Length: 202
Image (cartoon, rainbow, N blue to C red; front, top):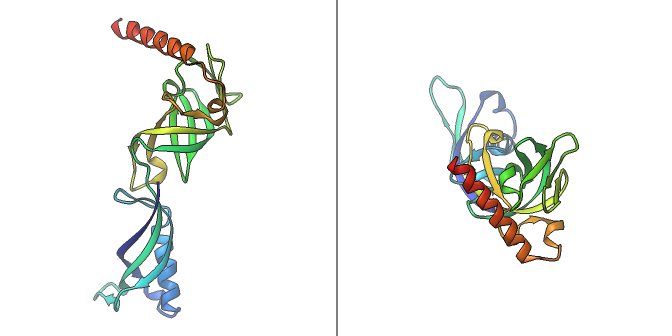
């Protein structure tokens, strides 16, 4: 989910930038400090703007830099559990597919793609259902639900987001326009659940 959030924080202006236009220096430092970073309370900060210094800066003895309190607006992307999102398949791997959802990537595990067993072909970049013959490939637009979120504040790339398409009204945009055969879909799901149960008892 994208939101526009107002944030107050303190930045350090190094002494070598004191000769510059202070507002320009503050703007540059705020953008470099916060854009592309993650905070658990807000999510990923995509863009920061409308930056306003609050009061006078403070110089601490022995430091040399100036500490300036600032207020700014941030366009943030915060994935929320159970949220339905649109994405694009960007990579097929042995255990599923990675998808771009906004500025972050999420994993669609092979067990969460469809109510069918699947064959994964990483060389051709496609996953195909054994019974349905449905295909998921790189570049496919899709709609999925977020089922797991773990944001890493130290590294956005290390964040983990899990998706599922094994629910009604989810799947690739092509699947969503297919004529529905609810009876066949229910039978496939029941067969898969029975096989999963038998495997679990072994």
